Length: 177
Ligand code: SF4
Ligand code: SF4
Image 1 (cartoon, rainbow, N blue to C red):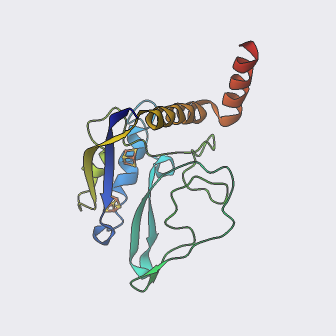
Image 2 (image 1 turned 30 degrees about the vertical axis):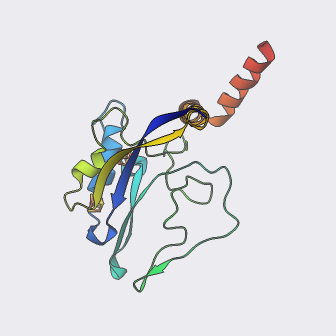
């Protein structure tokens, strides 16, 4: 079975150090603005900080996969006596909440590890050293890697044009073959 080397990028979160300054949200939204740095809007950030001042809760959560439908259930975590919001740790952009959706278009947002930058900018801007960036290489099956590349490509198209338009285009392509 053929294998290839894959670069694994990780951001570790030391949540106990977070003070809720939301600098990570500011820089993430600024670097993804069109043109870059032209606006700041945390609602467009791919990292959001869950806050509960009375309980001293500050927790950065990164935008993950798009989910077409809600889960059947909800999770509530209590850690060290602090109760986190329903679905508070979930990274999905899903229909049950407004988190991780582009506010104008409603399209899902996903952390892209600051594609095109040397390093993730939320890591660079977090002065409390909550976020730590690491890279390593792993051997993976070539076929699985190709499928993942395909999925990333399709997600990028869906981000740009919307899922329905991508589906229509694929249907037209398959008819013309
Ligand atoms: S920049 Fe760092 S300390 Fe500030 S909210 Fe984000 S993770 Fe927390
Ligand atoms: S790594 Fe980049 S895209 Fe991901 S949350 Fe941080 S600033 Fe945003």
